Amino acid sequence: MRSSTLRQSLSPGGEVPRLPTWVSPIQVRVIPISKEHLTFANDIASKLEDRMIRVDIDDRFDETLSKRVRDAETFWVPFIVVVGDREVKTGKLSVRIRGAQKPVDMSVDELISRIEEEIKGYPRRPLTMPKYLSMRPASVIT
Image (cartoon, rainbow, N blue to C red; front, top):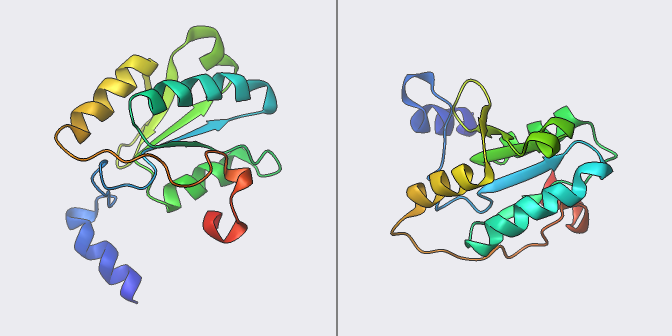
């Protein structure tokens, strides 16, 4: 009951609730579709980390892609990047923005610019948990 009250208070008009990006413990979650895409996911994460953007990688390949995306949505991650063959070939990322209806295609630099615009003037802190979800205790993930 309390959780539905919280959601209603945070989402006027039935919109998806969203924390400000600078407050979110994880600002970007990169989800590689398979192990072959992990190197590209690491490259993306490194570029974001260089700009003090909190990013993690969901490398739990024993889980389905939809479960990994759903977990990121449950944790209110503002930006979810799914990496597959198309993203590796084109360099354009498929980014799910919390509250938006459809994924948006953008480059890594465009994603960085968007996030930096949202967190401009606010303190930046590094990620305090392991970057890879597979390295975290299960209670922190689910």
